[in-house]
Amino acid sequence: MITINANSKISTLLREHPDALEAIISISPKFNKLRNPLLRKLMASRATIRMASKIGGCTPEDFFAKLQPLGFTIDRAAAEEDEVEATPLPEFMQHVTPDNVVTLDVRPILNAGKDPFNLILKQVKALETRQTLKLINDFEPIPLIQLLGKQGFQSHSEIIDGNTYNTYFYKADDVQLPDANALGSSDDFDAKVKLFEGRTKTIDVRHLEMPLPMLTILDELENLPTDQALYVNHKRIPVFLLPELEERQFEYRAKEISEGDVKLFIFRA
Picture 1 (cartoon, rainbow, N blue to C red):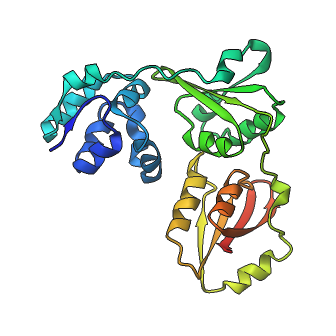
Picture 2: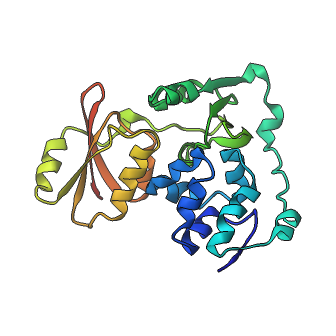
Picture 3: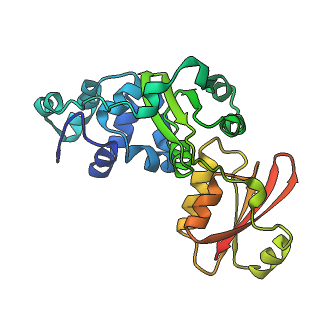
């Protein structure tokens, strides 16, 4: 069994022992998200034991106590010596002032079982150049960081405590947000669906909370045979998914049936 310390990645622990997942989940209720394979794939590859401890409101020692019985060797000396230095603040954070920051706390929305994506998108679109959105959440919004980063936004995250995560999104001069109106024409939506008749997989992501709809779609596309298409029942036009589809050389058509009911048809270009 390998030797681990506070800087070991969660993905490494999960790969090394089949019981590591349940051991980690037992440390804090906040780690229940790891039961979802898509979220696990996304988060475990980025988070170290030290980072996860901050998110879970625990300590690396709590991890060591659960993992050592599984056969992991603990290197506490290395954990102390390798203390990660504080990441220097990006330049835009040095100029953040109350008058150029828009604050959005989405925790009440999530606690009510609702999806804050539309509100986040509305605030992002309303930002003026060189303004910053301060998003308050109870987890790091990694997919949003990646998506906005591809549009030119700079970001910085900080863990306040186990229940509070502040993420700052800075709108630089060269930011260009995707335009939902620039979708592939829906005029031939039905024709494209007909073209792939008998070669289409259908999924429904309307019941999933952010960021699972997008992760689910991308995961399905990774395993989609080249001659098949994906028909998605969605609540909205997934604006930030569109650049991902183009980058992966997929074409798409969208049809908005009614509010909260959007059909998305995806196939290889």
